[in-house]
Image (tube, chains in turn green, cyan):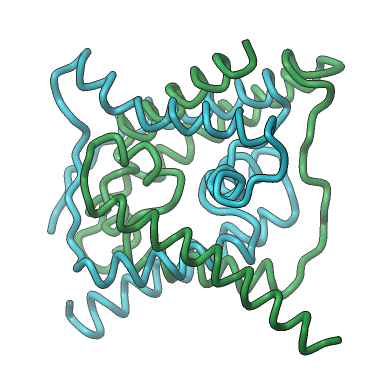
Length: 142
Length: 143
């Protein structure tokens, strides 16, 4: 049941990404191109998603526990550090170069376009690079 | 390259994205963040964690095909950048989202709606750097 529920959740999220225009890099890059061919559509994606999550999360949290798990696992950290700010700044730079972000690229893989696969392989390479950097910094520190 | 302004489908798609995030919280008690999902798939911690992430990702990948079966059209997807830019951008996205613990879905949708202070810092940061990057590429270098 839990896995079927997760699959259904993925279908709904993926359909939302597909319908919204988020999986189209041309549209995403135009959202950021205020000085050029600006397309403000993606503000509506964010607005729609935030309305539903803002209300829906609070309704879900009225329960003692989720339907198929023992407890809610929500990040609690409030630490604002260089990893958060530098990492987010880098993420935005990469997003502005490629036009894809991970949440849009995963459903976009279902269109069968090779560019999407290339992007996701590169993202995973970025994850690996981060691990290598963190490990080597830890080694220098000790 | 111009793209059409599509407020209605974008709002509708956004509502569905939000619904997916809420259902994952209601069902499994988890944040729907693509960076966490993907890195949990590549570096799995426990078999159970791996299983639900895999199911969720399979659902996401099947979505365009199911929409195609219903409507007969695939979603618009045009890539106005070179393969090298996709690859370089992808590595920077992976590195940055991993360091910053989230991306558009985790910080942008789930974090902002929880009023998480980390997400309230992360989202304006990546929106601004993305806009600056696009400006520099298109209007400074004229690519």
